[in-house]
Image (cartoon, rainbow, N blue to C red; front, side, top):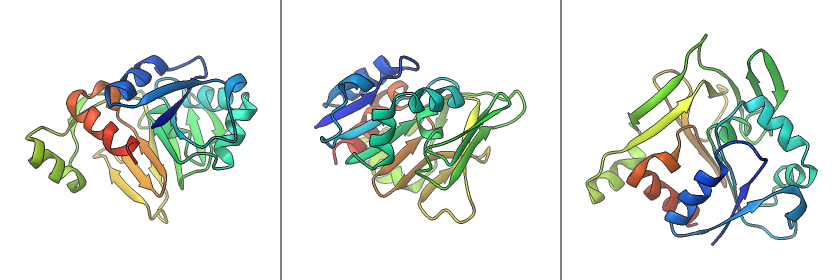
Length: 198
């Protein structure tokens, strides 16, 4: 399975590419000049960084931006800041930018000078079967200051954190993860094999 990792020159691109390889898939780093818009693949938007700057960098790569906006992918996966830009808008450090509009949500700081960092156990019942079968804990690693807040009318699968933002969303062929699967050990790799192996 070909997985295209968007490389804007920012964020944790190589870490995500390494995670994809550990999950058993080929990771191709994609920049504007080597994008092939007639080839559908899984697209991964890596995380880490300011979501407003991330969105602006993506807008400055028209081939990448247009391919995503035109739905030229079999699946779109956003991680951390890459998840945040899937929203209708992103706000960070007093600046706001239009997002990709793939999910009915807004990304904004989770609180004044609040940073969410560390390991947490996902409470969603969707992982219960995986956990019981493999006898593992559902711990994932978070590292962010902004979160995705879905609108009241949102009807996709939305697992909300105790702080009010989404841990993850699943809507058709769009998946957003606020946590970092590439830093989440064995469970992160199980998630990767599950979402990338479609």
